[in-house]
Length: 186
DNA sequence: CGTCAGATTCTCT
DNA sequence: GAGAATCTGACGC
Image 1 (spheres, helix red, strand yellow):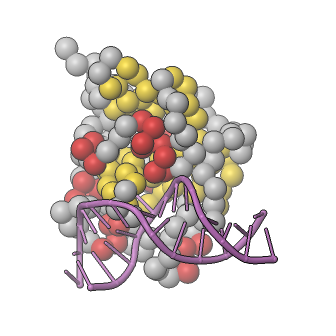
Image 2 (cartoon, helix red, strand yellow):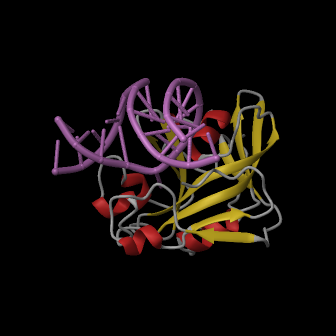
């Protein structure tokens, strides 16, 4: 019998911005064989869908991005710069193309590598493109409830270059001000 | 300290 | 064929 996990927030009804903030402090778990790799989420970014020009969904629905247009609570994992896997969680209603990028976690169990950046955390958690389109309600990758973070800092998103200033500057990155595991912004 | 290029491969034009 | 929601190590000051 596979375990049934619940989302720590109503991802279906909420937009990516709400979910990104609510995810800070929650626990991300990845089961690899008999090992549970666990970490507290300390940094996230919201991608708001088709109208958000920094979001992959803005380019329309393609083979790569179709998972973002699907049901909330699924993982969207893609490869960037030829070598780094990015972990996102789809939010909102079907067809909106919203997702939250997990940028950094604080190691809790069975994690030795660095996790202070989106490419690093997927490597530490052993998450790859093979995890694309898997459900966060299943028994492979899931989220656990934990107290919400109060001391949150909001900034523009990282690595957004080729779009209107309005979307480069949009304050959609959130991190736990008390954590030492935050990615370095440039 | 800081800035900069190279790694490396998938996706869309 | 370009460019990408990044990271690291090398160099210069």
